[in-house]
Image 1: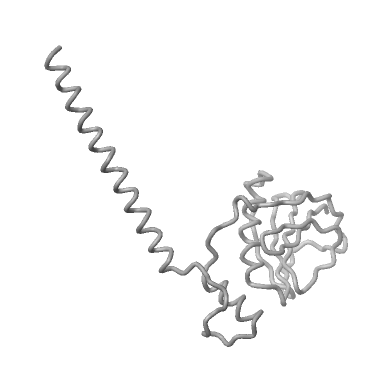
Image 2: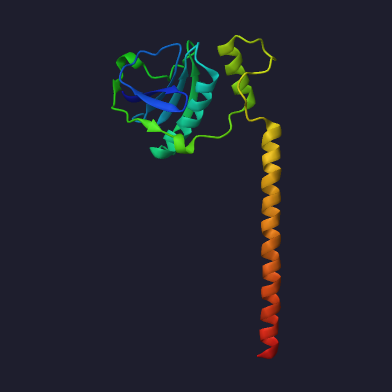
Length: 176
């Protein structure tokens, strides 16, 4: 069985050249030589919520970039691996290339992911304000409303120009 294994650290997807999985990390395992290609996301029991989020986003992007359109993505928790999960001790690793998605990285991380990560790293009790600013739904709605207003203004300008153009065409036809 041939596999490619990546570890996830924030937005970085780093190729791995061994099959030892660390409980502190998240791994993306590509099994492209199976009857039906599969992308596994293996979550270590002590891995971070933000890395889990980035692993899901990155697995989808890897699927697209490597044109694995028929591949399914399955998330597996450490210790709860299904029977179909590849036996890594028998696997032959293919050389994986580094994947970077910085230009495509999402601008928004769901607030519950940021809060959970902040609480875990800072030792804060759940419900206390985080120390890092996050993109909240209220800010997103405000930005959405600003974009809507700009778009309405743009459409209004176009409709006025189209109205003027229609009048000129009507005048031209009358004089023709």
